[in-house]
Image 1 (cartoon, rainbow, N blue to C red):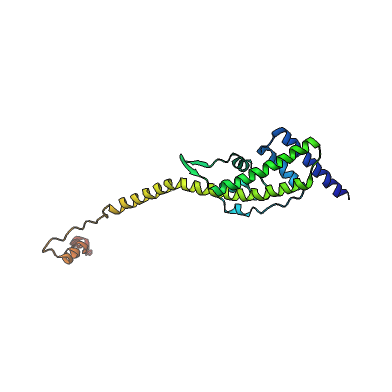
Image 2: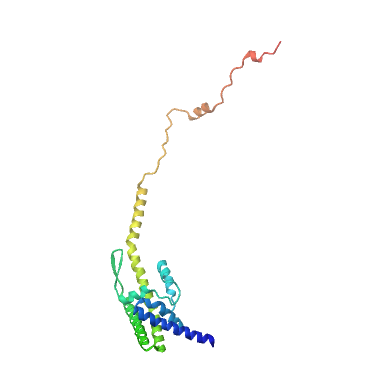
Length: 222
């Protein structure tokens, strides 16, 4: 009983923090931390974010792998609805399907903000409507995040392609230069005609002659 009452109190407290955050920041991405807490208190079901495992290492570090994590950059992109992405000075166009999911996320967020605006005026929460709006927001969030980040990774890979091709061409040129260099040759001196190799070797390696013995050294005493 006490645990249940404590949970209800925490939920109310989180909802009031959400409304206060809306009053301060308005409909902006600064609402996301308070929104996440309120959704947890209302037991809004969270969608799987296992698709993040297929992202590049940088995006995995940025987004994390836990459920219920909302990055402000994702919401800002959905709200702005900018279709052009610049990578290395090149402009790339986002697909209409990606922009469409971003528009749905923007509309869901605006609906949530309208409910928060009404709640702040009446000082009461339409919990059923609020929970349904949060569930819709969570569902479209993961859909947009997956397609948006996947497309950004694809665009970034396209931007890196000229550099990768330049590096590959440089290695090919180096291989070509090495293949054209003449192999080192060992110069062999020819043997003069008429010379006898065996006799030359025998004369060079014959034992030295012993010196003549002296007769005075070998005389015995008389």
